[in-house]
Length: 334
Image (cartoon, rainbow, N blue to C red):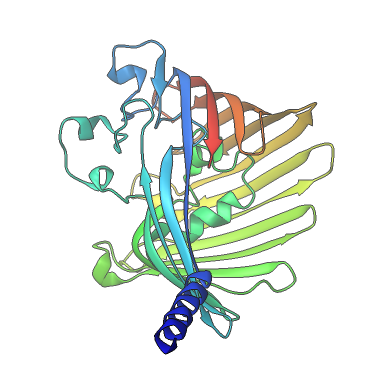
């Protein structure tokens, strides 16, 4: 009898422990058909003789297909530990690589399994701290107001990247404050020992309340002579339409022969029945980079987690031929 009670107590304790932890499998399945003229893409028309193609990880996909695991454990006292692993997967061929060079056997980031995320975090009343490969502070600052949800075909990202940075960093340590009346501040750094170009400092302040979102980002390398990037953008939902705009000043692009890349973006998104229509423009105004990217996008929801979309992107670079891409696709979130 005593052994039975001990066994039942052990089972109950184990159940309580499991109840405090959770692991979630999640992901995106996204495929498009179109003229995917994006340099370096595994399914770009330019890399495969021209013509329409099916793309699972490409420039006219709404987003890269992926799967991931995230989990949390309640440590008590309001403190939680978490982790996140996330990997690319192409629906066109089942691979985890999206570059033509990977098909030729080049080792590197795109052959790593969890190239999208691999990190651990602690969170509580103080905010949250995350360490490892993750989306960087600049990306989250721009994504807070960008109208397509940071889609692969975003005109803002094509022209200015994400405040002059890519979307992810290795070995990044980030801290996000609690929300103070709609205001959050995020700090991110990659230490000098993890980055050959010097330590990276990344700061964002975001206000999100009601119909308005505004976010400012500043990022800089510590290397001698490195210049800082700054971007401020926002959006406002008027009910009948949402308008977004930003100013970009990317000093890191300045060289002895080129001025810093500067410019503006302007976009509008509006529902027409069940369809969401978006038009976005991103213009570099400095003399070295003067050019305009623009995007037209339509989304039609099939459910809360699935939608079909169409996009046309005009990607211009000064001194180079304009790249025009279009695609029709479907995205399912799980």
